[in-house]
Image: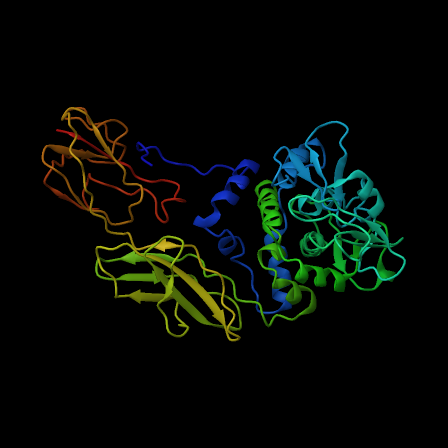
Amino acid sequence: MTRHLFRTRGLAISVLLAILFVATNLAADVRSTYWGEVDTSNQATLQQTVHDTIRNHILVPYTTVNWPILEAADVDPSNPGHILDIYKNESYEITSGSRPYNREHVWPQSRGFPQGGTWSLHPRADMHNLFLCDVGYNSSRSNNYFGNCHDGCDERPTEFNNGVGGGTGVFPGNSNWRTSTTWQVWDDRKGDAARAVMYMAARYNGGNNIDGTPEPDLRLTDDINLLQTGAQPVAYMALQSALLQWHQEDLPDSKEIFRHEVIYGAQQNRNPFIDFPEWGDCFFLGDCSSVAPMTPQNVIASNDGDDVTLTWSPRIETDLDGYHVYRSSTSGSGFARLTTDPISTTSFLDDTINPMDLYYYVVTAIDTMGNESIFSSEVTSQDFVGVAIAIPTNPDTPYIQNFNSMGTLVAATLPEHFLVAKSVANAQTGQIIWEDGVTVTDFRGGNSLSSSAANGIYNFGAGDPSTATDRAIGFLSSG
């Protein structure tokens, strides 16, 4: 896409952009950057750095403000304009006023942060913990703790929608099951509920929020004698063992991932156990044997024409074994590993390139157990670009060339009778309007223009052109 020397600015993430992200997220993995400061070395470092990453999120008030966000998050994938509730699996038309659905606090607000309590603000309104739910089923669940039913359980059946749910009379089938104290979520959504409760235990560990309001310390337990109601400095939810079981048996699916991105778009924080399900046992049980290091950050590619040098910031995990480097000729796929064994340095020289080809690189971290991180953000070798320019039919018509994918070193040879200008207007002979700080010099066609030229083709922003805040656009016109 050609941009006429305007400088692009990042836009605030909205629910709409979060939805669009889900449809176009093949270009980048937000996990690789959002969780970049997390230390997966052991249980203690994981707990602390995860909490530090997700705390102080944007507070969306628990008022009419969050209704459209939750309705976007819980939209029925097969029936737009409807929501799909968490327990009954009923598809309800989105409406206002008297709704057949309401907002279910999966971690019940009466267990640690009731309305009006001093600990109520962020936890009560946290949308990672809020699901749209059939009014009757919400009332039936009440503040029961989560667990697997064994004897004397009442069935709360589901409806058949989106290829799941429906049927009655068989345990567990596709139904929810309850006693006077427990609630067993049906199989297709039990992992969703578990990860919401796990998130709450990670997000809220006491102390004050950034705005100074106190927050509860929420913890999971298998000891039901610890469960209390009312505003509590330390509050418990059970059963941890059942929740971790459900978390493993019902891993995140497309509906939950979509929902997650919508909530992230509004609150600007993420649920760690949706992004990295393997963190569950490490965070709550201390078993970190299957947890990989986090992704290397700040990967940079430098191209001198004959080879590409990659550099990145070191990882902080104490069980780190090293790094692997991957290369592809296609953005987003087809990556082949260039390193035979993990390398301990934070740089890598690729001297096997063809200077005329474009390459894409990613870096991973690997620990002593062989657990490897997800790919880093992709970088490109495109630091040296030649430009092919078509000659306009009318020599008096300005020709605009797109240079927004160029790197830090740019060179071009122009056809005869052409000027190149860094300008807010068309570069016409005698009418050149240069930006501040640029010495006016005419470079006519046939000259080889480099990045050191006083005028020429310039790159205003460093890094990936899809995320750089300023990106140069070249203007060419007849001279």
